[in-house]
Amino acid sequence: MTKAFLVLDDGAIFEGESWAAQGETFGEAVFSTGMTGYQETLTDPSYYKQIVIMTAPHVGNTGMNQEDEESLRIWVSGFVVRNPSPSPSNWRSQQSLESSLIEAGVVGIKSVDTRAITRHLRDRGAMRVGIFSNMDLTRDEMVVRVRRSPQMNGAFLAADVSTQRPYIVNPPVGVKTEFVVAAIDLGIKAATPRYLAARGAQVHVLPLHSTLEEIEALNPDGVFLSNGPGDPSTMNDVVQLVRDLLLKGVPIFGICFGHQILGRALGFETFKLPFGHRGINQPVKNIKSGVVEITAHNHGFAVKAPIENNFSTVYGAGYVSHICLNDGVVEGLELIELPVFSVQYHPEAAAGPHDAQYLFDHFMDLMRSSRAKHVGTHA
Image (cartoon, rainbow, N blue to C red; front, side, top):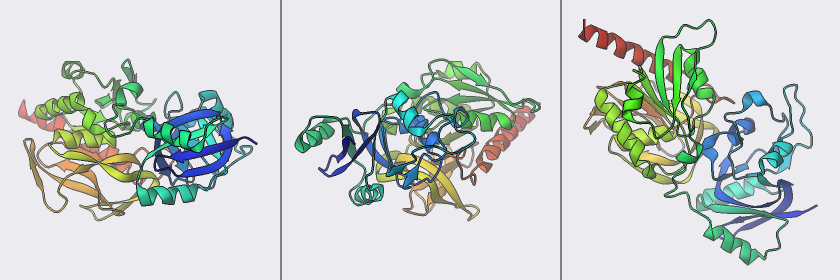
């Protein structure tokens, strides 16, 4: 047995056992409350530069498979579990969780009290963390290394995870192509263009540095702003692109990081949450319908917008469409005069829950209405 240490930047140290790759790694300490969906979490680009602590005590039962991957690689900086499964047992499993992490060079730690770590973060807020195994370091030296590692505030990370070249996801066989959607890849998950394509959209996934002219050349029916990692305050170029698109009146749908980008484009500030929202059981209230949705989240920043009344922007009036019932954080924005909306969470939620999939249908309805209005104007 090789000892391993999880070290937080406030000096707290949790001793466990080495698991997955050995060495040292650093990132922002975040916890996920999902009992399943760990493969989607690991391969979600939104978790880039984060060390994920799983609150579920037993992880890895179903192994790993190619079908459930949200991207071409594992993005997390480290993985923390209490009791990893020694061997997967599922007919879809192609590889164990630990072997996948070792192949990706992801340093992990096991046999730590992940719920105690989670309570520590809930009391003190998100912070930097390091995992050390097979390292000849004193406790003080480990703490110093963690405190010298980069913070998430001010981190520009989307360029590292965005596609370098455009690619197209077409509707499946038997589904008629009705729309063209330009999806700005800020760290997009593979499930998202599939959900759009299943509803008749030909999805052009574009690098984050795409220009207005390149988007307009596609003559899209709508623009999608994806999830992604980092601090939204660093995304000035993409914010300006969204402002240019708002002036064009094109339908826009943003999720997670894309929601924060849209919020900034509308003139709102973003701010760092004490410990963020993560996992697949976050309750969100749809203010219009009163329905409470159970939703999947991964965000450490939020939009500061007025919840009680409609707000005014240079693009017309709008309102907060969704709020988190745990802490009252803004979870959705919608404009009244333009076909534009966003949510802070993940409606594709490949591992579930699926309460928010209606948002894809809402986007289709907005594009359909916008097209009909445009045709009627020029009839």
